[in-house]
Length: 311
Length: 243
Image (cartoon, rainbow over all chains, first blue to last red; front, side):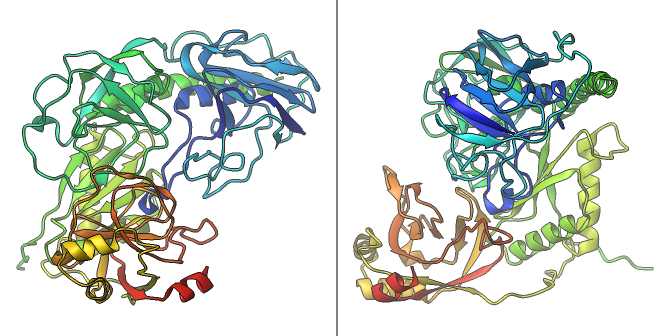
């Protein structure tokens, strides 16, 4: 009951929905850059929605299972695999996961789940802290990961699939909806009127944006305060940084805005040289959008559960 | 019946759509850190599953919540949560005129530090800038009692207030790529300890053999907001023996 890694891909990590309850001790949440991708992939193989998956970055790994499995790939579209549907993989069959053709991170769920040890209540990999996931690091060639007990199904599950909404539509040019940050009024206009390019130095900690430098009108010091996944900080050089899954828990730079939760998965799919703009909405509207999306995922969950129960 | 007017107020602001920030007071004001501690403890005591994290920092408390599971009876979840937290704060004494007393007063943590220039690269420069001998500089740093204002930057990294103004020192222009784990540094008017080997811009004056973040401990971070800390100078031999 294991998975063997033949080729690692660019950056393949084990992630579940993240590590909560330890932020006060300075421990980042980690977890998926695109939580919807991870949840949908899990649902499609009959796992708990938050089970640990592989997060594949740009180029996928080559893997093999020691027993028959159902897998599903969601998130960024991979070049060579059918997305958002259960796929049956036989024991000993080598599966090569191709490269991302839209978006930058795909989620591979495996029926039975990946059984690495939970650290502080989560299996998510914290790369910088070197803990969680598989030995606290990205997967390497030759790694062997334990898997849980897979489903035994009589019925062919490979006939159903999810299409369209609520799956985020990834794009190399998009508008992210944001909520006003504490220091928005300290900046001259420009943040909401320009397009930013995503810098190649972006990673799981943050998206570094490149655009016309923002000017801060005051020079008072900022006391370090809590940040969220999605907080957009503006350091002295005036180039915003969108804090992402592995970001530190406190920030000492002015906060101009926060990407709303419903759009965070889209932000997590951005890659170098993608183009992004921002538009302002209220926290209340953002929550309403989130509720709508969750209701939609709820329907998918019910539909899939029903299918698996009768399978 | 006379109702005594409460003298303390807390303020709220959104922190995205899944968190809010409670402003309790400026950290320099007397009793603010204690109020923060009492508020954090009271919020934890509610034991609600829709609060995901509570992060105190200086005079603020960030409350991370799940807007889907929150049992708000108002159309506006944020307004409801502000009222809910205000209520918790009121009952816990956070809003009372007198500084609320903490359930248990802990003794200061004693952190052993080897102030040796081989372990604190900037020690001599800090002393020179403060116009002090290295010995006087060590004495000044190790004779104060500090209080943890926030934990962050890296897991378990404590920001400590209480540094002698003489030792205040701007951060390095260019941060070091690697600061050794356990390094004790000065950044502005604060002092702190690097739990891991990370990049860092603080002036390094020594090193502790203690682990500030240990996954085998509960909680893994040794220090929490409000904790008191004192530094105890140790020799290089003691430092090496400890390790």
